Amino acid sequence: MPAIFNVPDMTCGHCEKTVRGALEEALPGAPVTVDLGAHRVTVEGDAGKAEDAIREAGYSPERVAA
Image (cartoon, rainbow, N blue to C red):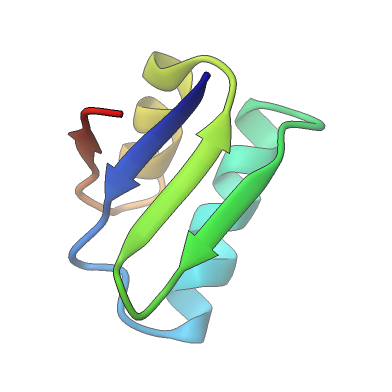
């Protein structure tokens, strides 16, 4: 089941790359989808690990109920 997050402070391509990199490091091989315009990130795998990785990268994820 995918974990979906709103990341309101993800505003540019650099932000997207940082968030994607953090998730790929925390959850190797997990599919990651980023919709920069909607400030939304979807990732397969452990939602808690994903949320922690986004926070550690310097962003403020808000988990969205699927």
